[in-house]
Amino acid sequence: MSAETTHAHTPEGGGHGDHEGMSKKRIWKVFYILLGITCVEFFIALVIAPHYRGALWINPMYIVLTLFKAFYIVGYFMHLKFEKLDMALAIIIPILFIIGLILVLTNESHYWIGLRL
Amino acid sequence: MSTAVAQQVDDVKSTPWSGGKSPFDVEYGKLMMWFFLLSDAFTFSTLLISYGALRFSAPVWPAPSLVFQSFPGLIESGAPLVFVGLMTFILIMSSVTMVLAVEAGHRNSKKEVVIWMLFTILGGLMFLGCQALEWNHLHSEGFWWGHIPTAEKMQEFFKAGVPYTQQAMSSHQFANLFFTITGFHGFHVFSGVIINIIITINVLVGTYARRGSYLMVEKVGLYWHFVDLVWVFVFTFFYLV
Image 1 (cartoon, rainbow over the protein chains, first blue to last red):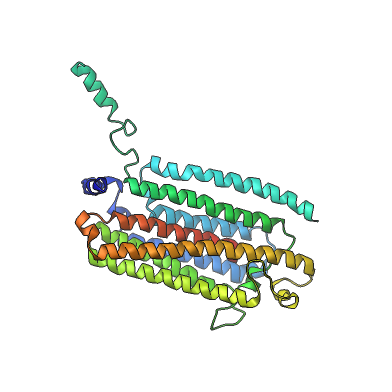
Image 2: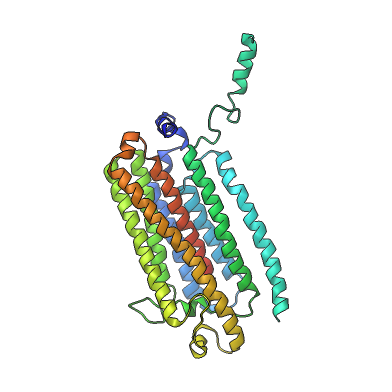
C-alpha cells in the first residue's frame, strides 16, 4: 500500500496524464457521444431497418457503432487513451486473439450450415 | 568500478524498461485490474462468439424485435427495444457517475466521491432490477435454460412459415445462450455493486483520506466501466442484430 501512496503523491501525477484528461466537461461530452450513438442505433433498428429487411449493411453498421462506443468507454472512461502507449498496447494487442477466434468460428459455422441442411 | 563505468550504468538505467521504476507508469493494483479485465474480456468474447457461431449456422432465429417487445408492468407488446433502451441508459449513466467519483477523488473531495459512488450503486441496483423484470417476462413466456414456449406461443417469435422443428431447435439455443450470457453479465453487475458498496464504506470511514489517494476508487471504476462495455456488446448482439 505504501507504493500506492508514494505513487499518487509524485508531482508528475504518477502516470495518469491527468486531470486535464477527464474534466467534468469532458466526462459529460463523452456521455452525450455515447447517448447519441445509442440513439442512432435505435433509429436504425426502429425506423430504417424495417424498410430494408435483410439488407446486408445493417448489421455491420451496428457493429461499427458498437466499436465506436467501446472506443469511447475504454479510451476516456477507463482512461486508456491517457496512459503510456506501451501500457495501451499491452491491453489492445492481445485482443487480436479475439479477432482470430471470430474468423475461425465464422468459417466453422459456415460449414455447420452445410451439415444442417 | 570506476566512476566512468558507474556513469554508464546509470545511463542505461534511465530508460523506462531498464528496471528500478514502473515502465507503464501505472500503480501495481491498477495494472493487475487491467490484466484481469483483459482475461474477462476473453471470457465474454468466447461466450458471445459461440453465440454468433450458433446463430450464424442456424437456418432461423427468434426475431429480437418480436421476442423483446414488452415493457414489463407497462406495455405488454408492440414496444421493441424500449425497455432495453432504458437499461442501456441506466448503465451508461452509472458509468458517468463512476467517472465523476474518480474525478472527485483526484481532487480529494471525500463528500463528492461518496455522493457519486452512491449514485453509481443506485444505477447498478436499478439495472439489476430491470434485468430481473426482463428475465421474469421471458420466463413467463416459456423461455428458460432448456425450456421453450409451447408450439403455438412460439409462432409469435418467428416470421411466418418457419417449420416447427427449426423453431424448436433455435429457440432452445436462443434461450440457453440468452440466460447464460445475460446471467454472466448480470452476475458481474452484482459483484460490481457489492465491490462499490465496500469501497464506498471505505471512503466513508476515511481509509483513502488517510492514505492520501483515492486510487482504489479508480480501480473499481475500471471494473465498473468494463461491465458497461460488455453490456454495449450484449445489447448489440442480442437486441439489435
